[in-house]
Image 1 (cartoon, rainbow, N blue to C red):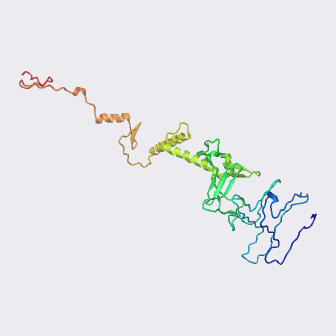
Image 2: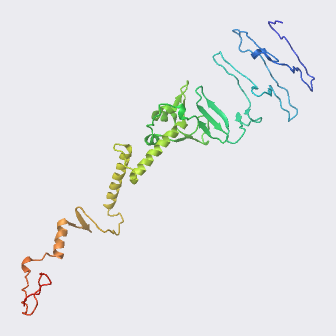
Image 3: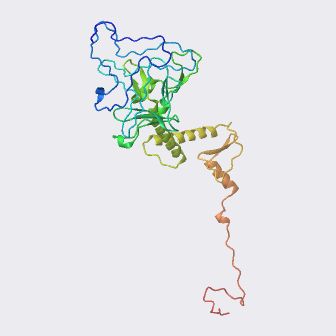
Length: 351
């Protein structure tokens, strides 16, 4: 049957209370063909849309009645496949769109979409079947991507077997110190609403260009996950600086670590020197085993240099006069007194 206008088949009813207006049942058939040669109903079109045609529909399912029963559920399209088979595959719905400038396999204009749940409470709600299991996975043609688990964790592909040309990054502590974390409101938010935390994409792009992408409209997006390796490198560099100050490592010559340690101790010496030179530093007593002064020692404005101290030592401990030293005259020994001798003690001196 061929039509150029009008309706080929029309069925209407306003008195059905139970049952179905159209019931097509298939039982005990054995499919032997493939693809579109198998099926209960086949709708196909190879027509060309005319110049004045805005849209065309192969199957239009619409429902706009009134539910007088509060617990009633209305389905516009209900598809359920429960075929059994050890190695077979069941597909509840298959949608594909290609060939045009804009191709959309499915559009959900209104209502929530549930995957794993029949009562979604968000525009898209995905419910897993266990604790810590993957509920969503995003990959590209190269099999790299990220997965979201039920615990809220995000895990992205990172296997070394999928990587090459691996090298250390040059970004680190200096990069982090140049970042500007900010609080902000989106343009669509009212003033006074809770602010978000983050960065400005243009500012990050000036430091790490590869973390920022620009779409066809010129709008920029930021890969915040990519900041994590930079933060790790910054912490490592900071730890090297602390170890260098503590003396647990020797900084490499010419390294940023050496520059930091040298600047640190120079600043410490300068600060302590300025503090000690200040009369108001509050020092009351100083205890030391040895006190060395390079130029002079001062007390309440009176100072002594090296020569002054030497003169004081000569006054306190004068050097002995060689001319005043007399050699005592030995007392003659009596004839009977034994004369000490260094000779062999076995020899008796002659009286």
